[in-house]
Image 1: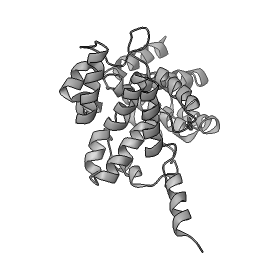
Image 2 (image 1 turned 90 degrees about the vertical axis):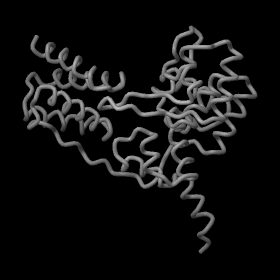
Image 3 (image 1 turned 180 degrees about the vertical axis):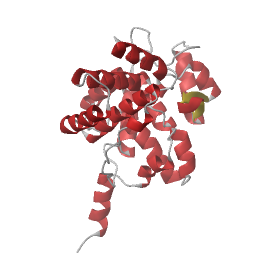
Image 4 (image 1 turned 180 degrees about the horizontal axis):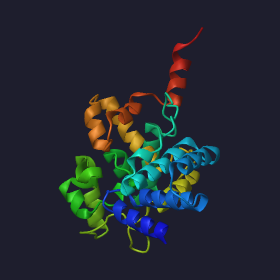
Amino acid sequence: MEKEAQIQGFTDYLSTQNLSPNTVRAYLAAIRQYFSLYPELNHPSLQMYKLYLLEHYKPQTVNLRINALNSFLTYLEWPDSRIMQIRVQQKWFLEHIISEGDYEYLKARLLEDEQYLYYFLSRFMAATGARVSEVIQFTVEDVREGCKGIFSKGNKTRHIYIPASLQSSALKWLAWIGRNKGDIFLNPSGNRISPDGIRKQLKRLAARYHLDEQVLHPHSFRHRFAKSFMEHCDDITLLSNLLGHESIETTRIYLRRSSSEQKAIINQVVDW
């Protein structure tokens, strides 16, 4: 019973941290997994759990679950028992990012097929740099304003700007479909579209238009925004703010070239 009370208290604690619903679910799942393996919360068991994670999961998942445990320990006021994350080897190139050519091709085909919902979804993701969980929150009122305020960690507000060209065409589309308020991205049932629904439909579109499904995923459009921004404006501090990164070091990945870009350069310049 004590464990359930702790988990419930932790659930209430997480609700005050401005975390995404997916992160909250992942954190709670990690805590429940820990207690399913180890009956007591103590330092030796925490270290054993870390070893268990290393044996069964990829490094990013290991660190996510370690973050969950550390957050739980912070909630319990046990800071001395925090677990060290593992070092993830950093790649010196970007992977699975939609090219500018494929992005333009996708937009053209979506317009041609009158797939306006996903045409504008793609444009909003690629032209604002918003995460998919943020894009689905856009309302008609936000489009009129040309900006959306998103609450992030520490109760800070980050502004996501809608470029004028996108704002103009989106307002015409919304007027055409008769939507004058509320969410702009709705599913056939009239409810706000879900990130999972977007991911599944992008896979279908990849198959329909013969595009690589590895680059046709929601986060790929955020990568496209960042890459294009850096190609036209070298203000990495501004980009970091626009993307909502806590550290500018996270943003530096967009200074790197994709693996395909690296290969193209090698093919062009190396002839010996």
